[in-house]
Length: 110
Length: 114
Image (tube, rainbow over all chains, first blue to last red):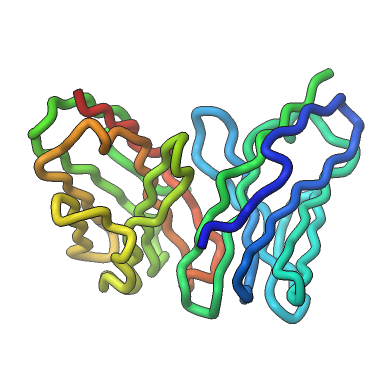
């Protein structure tokens, strides 16, 4: 089942904060976040594992509520470079493949 | 270092023609994924290889689609015969490890079937 992302789109001014949510109807092992700029390939942001381990390498934080099968991506003090479409990918169990949501489009304006 | 390489970048073909998309993963990566992206359906996994072996092909739409990975540095996705509904951007991604690891995406091939 495809995870559900909300909101579908958000417009921010530079410096504002945003939260993007991803929820699944099934139990999850991990949640992956990717960002895709227009006309480009998706780029990895972060992995959140069951048990609380988090792996990422951007100034973006996220949370993973295993009981609710939900993850949230927190973008604080947004920059113009944050604009793009954010996808969450969910993994039901270790070794299963990712199922991506339809994405949340983020536009940061000056 | 070169990332994932895909060719061609753009392909325009007529319905019924055979289409072959190519992918070279990052050297040392042992997992390879083919995805299809459309506005309607988003990013869908077509097939996943691990150590050159197809592990999950449940996303391959139908028999018209086939994928091979003859060695660790090359994979193809073939559509025969192509149909207008196959029009999409096809991404190849690779990772070191498995499905749980960070995936590195290629630039994609934009396929248009007339």
